[in-house]
Every structure is written in C-alpha cells, then in structure tokens.
Length: 153
Image 1 (cartoon, one colour):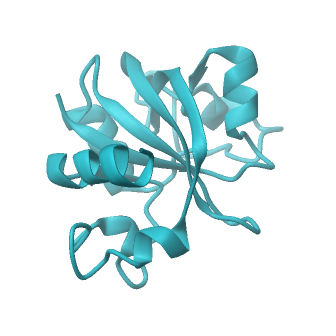
Image 2: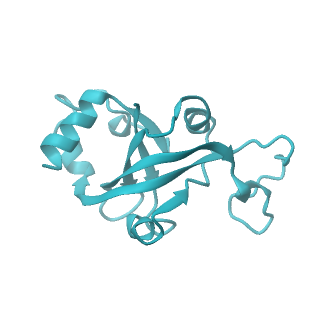
C-alpha cells in the first residue's frame, strides 16, 4: 500500500461534500506529475490524506481510499467546464482521475501543526516544501504513521 496527500479547495469540493457523497472522482488535476502519480503509481486500496488548500485553515481534514484506478477525467471534454482542455481528445485523453471513497473525516491537522514537525518526523514531506503546488504528492509510510498516530491521536 502507498500513501498520498490529495489537495482540494473546500469551495470546489471539501471533506463535507465527500461525507455526503461517500465516493467521488478526483477530477481537475492539470499537472503532469500529479496525473502521472494517479496513472502510474496509485493502486486500489492506497490511502490518502484529504487536504483542504487555498483556504483560511489549510490542512488535513480526512482520510480517503483509492477505489477506482485512473480513467479519463470527463471535465477535460466539456467546453463549459473550468477544466476544459481543447487539446485533449476522447480517443487520446490527456487528463485522468481516480475515484476515492471516504474512510473518515478527521479533526483538522493544520498546515501550521505539520510545519512544527518539518525538521523532525515530517522532514522531506512534499506538502511542506517551499514552492510545492502539486495537488497530489506521495507520503512516506513513516510520515503517515506519525500523522495518524501522533497528530490525529
């Protein structure tokens, strides 16, 4: 099993939306490296932190599980959608998504709390790297264990 951190802006799709829906497609990824993580490395059963970004209180707000492998993101084909890509074609899609299901909503583990451990247990965690804007990043098993065991209690 691999571990991930998946960012979403709560105004676009937040943890409470997933609590309601139970399962969702993780659409809208428009970065090749993040897409490649989904396409090449994510497997059924992998776990991920659901992370609220670009908001007043950024941080981890839940845990999800990959429940469908990468497949074409339909938003790339919709000219009315924010994530429309006119260079992508149905027979050769550029953008993918996976489906995730809710494991649990958690108390907020804030970005500030994560930063308190960036020179210790969370050293090298990609979400803490200066300039990191990737919406999907791998999480080391030791970092996962620290966050779920120590920070989430």
